[in-house]
Image 1 (cartoon, rainbow, N blue to C red):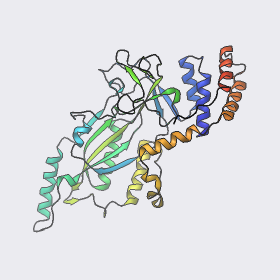
Image 2 (cartoon, rainbow, N blue to C red):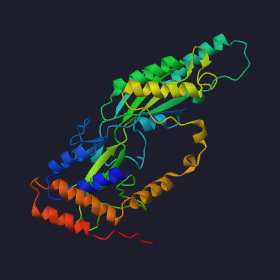
Image 3 (cartoon, rainbow, N blue to C red):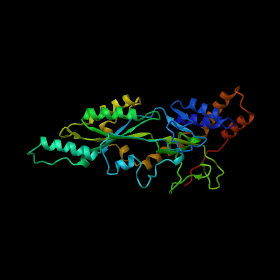
Image 4 (cartoon, helix red, strand yellow):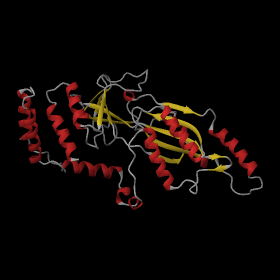
Length: 344
């Protein structure tokens, strides 16, 4: 964590008098885990993207699969047919193209076909029959900025074959994520919020630029971090059996699925959580508590002495590289600047 802050501090000082292109190059060298894209890969034809569009991409974004029973509004949400947009959608000028696929038959029709087979085989059985709402399941998987519908179909087909499901629908979402201040990109709490009690910035609707103040005088170096993911929907009744049962799909099997998913999508595997850690305090912390803890931790990592040491290393490393006199004056000013004090 300290190394990340040192790199970010070095970047912010070194790029004071450099062009944006040079600054981006330096930042990529300092942050080998991140790349910066200046154009959206899956752009929408009817959207005018910002001239200074900058996407920050984590090259080490891990794979993840979360399987759950599908909600009643799953299809409307996945196909963006909801009457009211969720708050976590990106502003329109940053949304990329979503992708949707379906198997060609509704889940209701497919369920009725499977239920007919079930009733024929189970004739005379007086037990409880499968219900549609218990047979509709959904898997949400992480993606990166290169995955498309073909990649998701490979995963969906693998899951369907392994567990004897029907793959019914797929939706890739590229319109969710967050806007950040690129000058403070490593702060995990760094998110630009335009509405509500946590509002921290302002937007000029004409220029589509963002500012820290109401007067629109302090422009923000805006970047976008996309939450690329896909929803894979399944109907779990097949061959006269409800196949989504704990007796068939155990925790070890799901863990193996996570590993296979990482290989198929060419992504790092997500962290393996031991059983003893599942009931730890980490699980019970709210997102707000975690964010506050991370923010406080970052604020206490570098004291004034450590900042001066970093700046001295930076000064020596900058000698002979044709930086301006003003640049070294700025380094000296930063080295003598008093640390910020927390406001109660």
